[in-house]
Length: 235
Image (cartoon, rainbow, N blue to C red):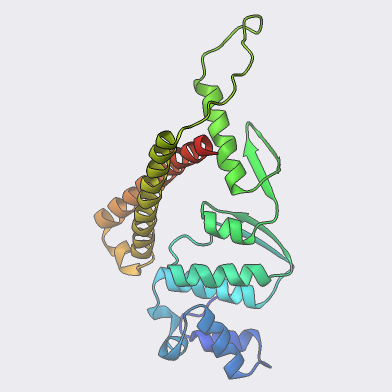
């Protein structure tokens, strides 16, 4: 990929990529990555780390390569740019290998999943909901007491839930959904903080923000698993 010139503007960078394109076409494209108005004409050296990453993504997508390898591309990007990236990847006609914890991005762009674990990688036949169910089953097997094959009972039929039990589970599911929404907002706020170049001048603040970000991601994973357990019980 072309090296980003800190003394140039996003518009000038794009004109170097495609000298034949009209300014309006390039401005429209940059606008989809939130480089609008004066921002499209500002020197890149004044941008935050997140803005530079956003410009790099814009330049990659514009060149329409045959193959993209993306490792956590939405880290430190705000919601608007994540949506723009998702739309760009949906219209991309080449092959993409995407590594990400961003469930929305995965569900919106991925056709085939690869399950990596136990020193092997193999195709996963299902979507993200199936993946969470798979994780729940793995955890159940890990936590289940070992039973001799000679004494193993036949699987018991799943009990039917009455209305009261269904209501309790539905209320739990709603609480988990609210918690997830709160955690997702907090996660976005922390990623936006990490995208601000000024934070890298304060080592203590940077370390705390990174630690908070890691903790929130773990909380999201934990709540999602509990939420899926409730949904499975309701199914």
